[in-house]
Amino acid sequence: MKTAVIIPVFNEKSSFNEIIRQAKKYVDVVIVVDDGSSDAKRPQVDTSTGGIQVLRHQINLGKGAALKTGCEAALQLHADIMVVMDSDGQHKPEDIRRFLQVLHDPHVDIVFGSRKIGRDMPLVMMIGNKFLSLAASILFGIYISDTQSGFRAFTASAYEKIKWNSTRYSVETEMIANVAKKKLAFREIDIETIYKDDYKGTTVLDGVKIFINMLIWKII
Amino acid sequence: MIGLQIVAILFALWMVYFSYLHFRRGEFNKLEFILWQLVWAGLVVVVIFPASVQFILKTFSISRTFDLIVIIAIIILFGITFRNYVIVKRIEKKLTKLVIDESLKGIKADTSGD
Image 1 (spheres, rainbow over the protein chains, first blue to last red):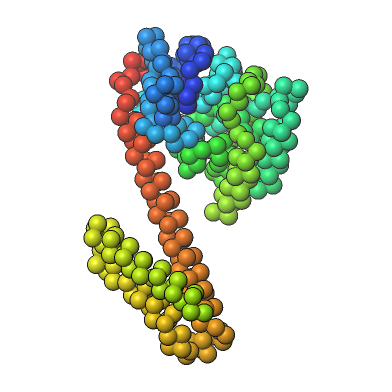
Image 2 (cartoon, rainbow over the protein chains, first blue to last red):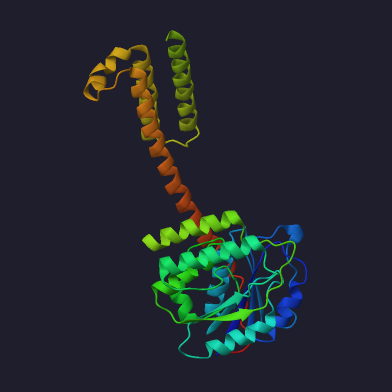
C-alpha cells in the first residue's frame, strides 16, 4: 500500500523541514503544498532525501484548497492512503504510524486524530470544539470528539467520496458531514498536540462560519 | 422639493455620463448602454414630472412618487447584489480550480517507488 502525507504550508519557515523529515520515515511520499506564501516567507523545503513533492499555489486560497491540491496530487501518484497534518509543529509525525495501523483494517475508511482535552488546550478552543462536536452529532448523526483537528488519514477511495468544496477552515467539518452522508466507517485515535503561542488555526469567527456552513450542508 | 429634484437630476446626468464612459471603454455592450441610459432618462422624467407615474401610484396604493422611486431603487439594488454574488462565486470557483490545476503541474516523476 502506497502512503502519502499532505502538509499544507502558508508563510511557515520554522522547524518544518524537521517535520517533513520525520514524516517521511512513515510514508512513501510527502506532499508539501505551499498555499501562496509571500516571497519573503516562502518555505525552503529540503527535497534531497527524495519522495518529497513540493507544490505551490500562485495565490493564497486557504487550507481546504491546499489539502485538496495535496490529495489530488496523492491520487496522481497512486497513493492508497493519505494522511493530512499541519505544518506548524502541533502534530507529532510519530503518530502517523498509529493512523496507518488503524487504516490497515479494511473496514475503516477514515481515521480522525482527536486532541486530548486538558490543561494545554485553550479554553475558548475547548468550548468551541465541544459545541461543534455536539452540532455535528445532532445535524449529521456522528459524534467526533474533536471536529477541528487537522490530523487525519483516509483511504484514496474514501477521499473520492468525501471531496470537499470548502477552501478554508470549514474543510475539517465538511469532511465529517461527507463521512456521515456517505456512511463511511471511521475511527478516532488520541493524538498528542503541542499548542504554540503563534497559533494560526481556527478563530472564534471561523467557528461561527463553520456552524453556519454546517446548517447549509445539512439542508443541501 | 425643488432642491431634491435638482440633486436627483444632477445625479442622473452624472450617471448618464458614466454609462457613456463605460460604453466607450468597451465595458458595456450596446444593449447594456441603452438599458442604463433608459434607467437614468426614466429617473429624470419622473423627477421633473412626478405626476407622470400617477397611475402606478394608484395601482399599487403608494402615496408619493418619492416612495415609488425608493422602492424601485431597492428592488434594483437587491437584483444587482444577487447578480454580483453569483458572479463572484463563479469567479472564485474558477480561480480555485485554475490555481489547483496549475500547481498540480509541479508534480515530479515519482521516485519513491510503487
